[in-house]
Image 1: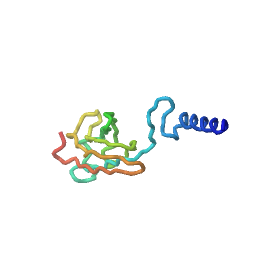
Image 2: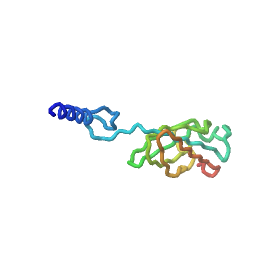
Image 3: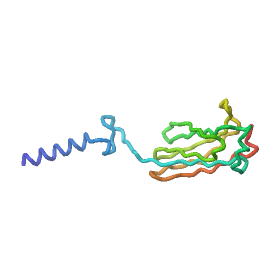
Image 4: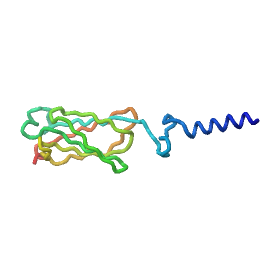
Amino acid sequence: MKQLFLTLGALALATACGSNGGGFEGGSGEVVSDAQGTLVVDWTVDGTKDPSECQGRATTLDVTVGSSNGDSHEYQADCDAFSTSIDLPAGSYNATAVLIDDAGNDRTTPIDINPFRIHDGETFTAPIDFPAGSFL
């Protein structure tokens, strides 16, 4: 009987102090999730993916992604790439995109990306367009 209690006690201790594989970060009590997916921002300028539409107007797409917990991060891609992938932890997000020049100045009004959810192992594609009227 004593052997059974020792075995159960050791099992309980190993479970409570386990590695991150158990879903907990050591000592903090914070749940850790490795779940991740991808946001693909696919954009056009005035309805086209013509690199000449970027030349002289904007050099970079600047995307600000905000999470449901209030964190936000900025991501950039060349204007004439017309698509970029952003890996994000699974969760709920909102985002805005703007085209900027070499000096980091906005060249367009911001385009809101509808709120979206990233699921583990999945890709969410957000198509957006910067119409001619969005340029400043």
